[in-house]
Image (cartoon, rainbow, N blue to C red; front, side, top):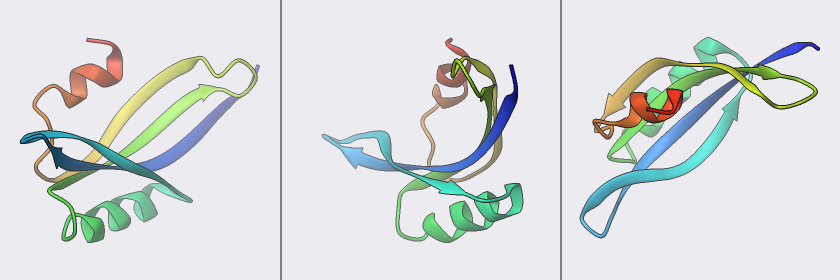
Length: 84
């Protein structure tokens, strides 16, 4: 049972006058995720850089950490990562 760390950027877009999730992009490193999120925030209402740690075999989530947020991010975004 090995743990795997993944870095990703979550964009946020406005749909039906509400802020919601857009596309996700993988990043190779933590600093890469932060840089990409900051750059993408200029083209999106908001972005967040995340570190996801999950069991490599089962996919079970160990932890999800927000590394940085740029622009508008839904108020309940952090709660949604941990399941509320």
